[in-house]
Image (cartoon, rainbow, N blue to C red):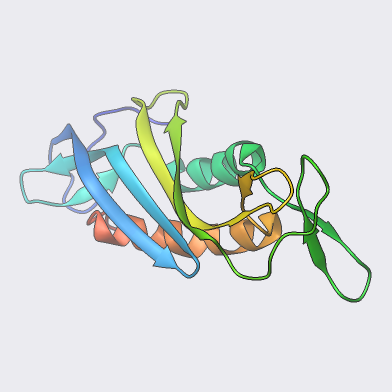
Length: 160
């Protein structure tokens, strides 16, 4: 990734490293909240990522490394899909039990650690009681949109 204090891409002014307290983006059923996201802010108030490739690196990290570690059901069936508990193989209910927030501590090269909260419906297994998400593929499908909306909520500007 790039230098922590690169010039502002909008006005070329000096920037300082700051942290966004909290910003949330939604793409149902997923909500992504960024806490302590490091950004660069200039004297004109422009807000940018610490590196041009940061959003893509974060998205790849979430989808390829972090989300697969969340408790998730196993999808079975060729035509009609059913979701089964990853622990006891009991079929899960069709309706979620409640929403749950999964906290992911992001530790990426050249970026100060921050937190990503993934909030989504979970399903309680009737057999063993484990709470898990239904569909990992659906989560991965909604992550880019929810993450983009969280960036917008944080006030981060797009770079040309």
